[in-house]
Image 1 (tube, rainbow, N blue to C red):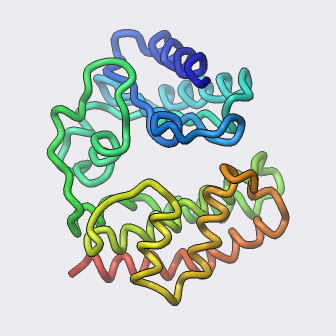
Image 2 (cartoon, helix red, strand yellow):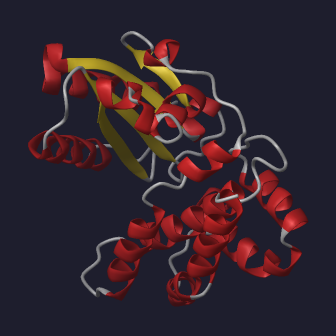
Length: 246
C-alpha cells in the first residue's frame, strides 16, 4: 500500500543529494507493518556522507511537505537528516546511533548500522535517548500557545509521545529492554510509577490516538497537552535526571 510513497521519497532524496547521499532508512509503523492508511506517518531518516547544512535541512523539509501534499496514504511525511561521521561519533552512541541501529530499517544504500556498536538497555542508553527533550518541550509549548500553528493536532501528538518516551527512558534499564509498542510501554512504566498512571494514559492517548481513529483535534486535547507540559513534563525530566545520574 505504501510502496509508491516510499519509492517517491527515495527518488526525491536521491535527486536532491546525488552522490552526497550515504543511505536512507525507514522507521515507525510503516516498516513494522502496523501502519494505518491515512492515520500513520511515513518516518524517514536520511544520512549524508558529509555534514548537513541548514540549507540541506530546509530542502528536506520542503521535500517532505511536497510528498505529504501529494498523497492521502499517510497523515504526515517526516524526514530527519544526519551526517554519517556524526552518527559514528562517541557522542551519538546513545542517541542518533541507537535510533539508526535499533529503530530503523535500511531502504537504500549501505547500512551504517553495521559500523555502529551493539546497543544494550543500560543506564547510559537511558541517559542518552531523550537528548533534546527539554528543548522540544519548550518549542511545543510555544506552538500550542500560538493561534497561527497550522497543525495543533501534530503538536499535541508530539507532546504525548515525548512524555511517554521520556517516562520509558526512566525504566528501560531496570525492566530491562526496549519496546516501540505504546500499550506495552505504558504497562511497563506504570508498573514502576503507578501514581503517574493517569497522566501516562493521557500521553499515550494524545500520542497514538490517531491510529485508533481518535486524533487529538478537540480543544480538550490541546488543553490536555498544555497541562501535561506544565506538570508531567518537568516531573519526568527531573525524575529522568535523578534515576540516570546514579
